[in-house]
Amino acid sequence: MDNMLKIEEMPEALRRNSVWLLVLGGVLVVGGTCAVLSPFVASVFVLSIIGVVFLFAGVAQIVQAFGAQGWKGGTLHVLAGVLYTVGGLLVLFKPLAGLMAVTLVVVATFLAGGVVRLVAGWQLRPEDGWGWIVLSGLASTLAGVVIWANFPASAVVVLGLIAGFSFIMEGWGMIVLGLAARRLGGMAGGKGEPQS
Picture 1 (cartoon, rainbow, N blue to C red):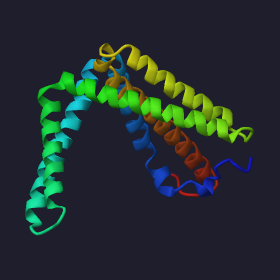
Picture 2 (picture 1 turned 60 degrees about the vertical axis):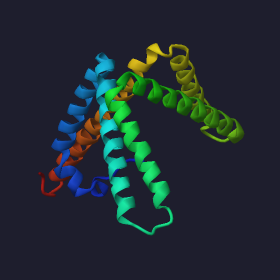
Picture 3 (picture 1 turned 45 degrees about the vertical axis):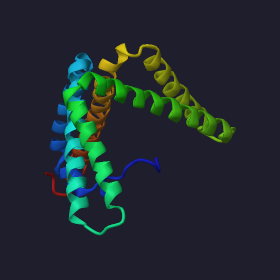
């Protein structure tokens, strides 16, 4: 009971914006479901956004470096900007190669993160929760192995699936929060507080 959220502790802004939480949550769930059902299209879309961000970041970095003449790190800043720009252009004009590169980064991240959590969880024994950390590490490592075992075929769907499932989880989190805010707002209204 001590861990339950009290009505008075629910921020008023959250109660007032519960409808927006529900709408945004619904949009994320629908968008995430579409991404999971069509992971190739979602992968290319996400990769295109990454490419545009890299391109703008690279150009901005180059412009900034030339604008700061006399700065010791200017040459390295220009070089980094060129790399970002070239990377962005490659991702935009060679999306399959970009998907493969991003998939390899995802595999490396899953494997490294999984191994780190396995070791950390094992070192925490017999503290509470150590098993969950180990389980999380196993899941991450297994995901990395499965993606790698199916490479390069997995490259065309991995990014879309990750984005889709992430949107679905985020959306359901917002829906649950929005429903809780509405319910607690209604309870607060019944106690004499203004109800929105």
